[in-house]
Length: 313
Image 1 (cartoon, one colour):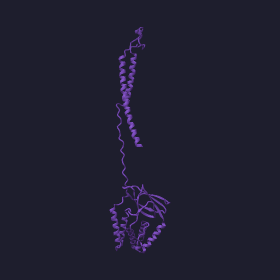
Image 2 (image 1 turned 180 degrees about the vertical axis):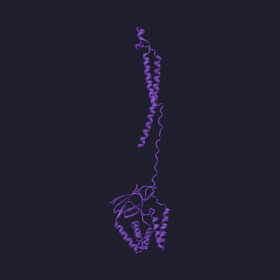
Image 3 (image 1 turned 30 degrees about the vertical axis):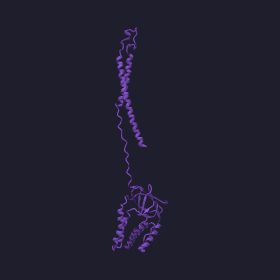
Image 4 (image 1 turned 120 degrees about the vertical axis):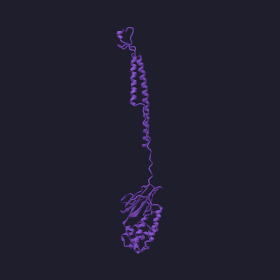
């Protein structure tokens, strides 16, 4: 790569190349303008030929060399500018012709000494000004057209303005157009190709949202039920342990125990058994419901974690 400053160039204009039938129409109009270049109305002839050449530059080149007919049309335009004594326009047109020809010799000698001398003088001046490198960055091979001729990446060019078309390697890739100004000798200007027709992004469907597991009863109610069942079991057990015992001594009466010493005798069999049954049932039912609900909720959370993890990785 040539040393010097490097500039990354973004597209000035981004568009599709015109269809092939328009290219053929542009070639026909260019030839017609050349044929009419001897019109006595030189201003009209200049305007028509300049417009036809400008139209021709709107297409990427499809050959490695500029057709001789196109080079001749550009030489004719230079001669017409000289004929109407527009030296500035003649020099500008000649410079663009030299940058476009790039190694090809345009038919300047056919159109007189003045045209030939201008060509040789401007060629020496452009070569003395130096060159710069135009780099094209693509994914894979790119089709490149510089001033309407097929070119390779990394072209070393005379300083000045260039019309650059770039197309990616994919069959459905689109052309991008760049107007490039090379101003620094030994500089490097870089074009990065970005396809104007990128493939449509494939939308990834979101994972289905599963309904939250529904509990049979609120968790607090299930816990309270189990706790109440335990409490009833304890009370029932206490009542059964007191059944048949003296209210004063809390012990079973013997043959020597008097009524005054014993007091009342507890009769709590029915109540104790009832509380044991109710408490045991409530504990079992609440415990089973709590266990089932906790398992269902745990599975649902596990599925959510699994889905999230699969999308992260």
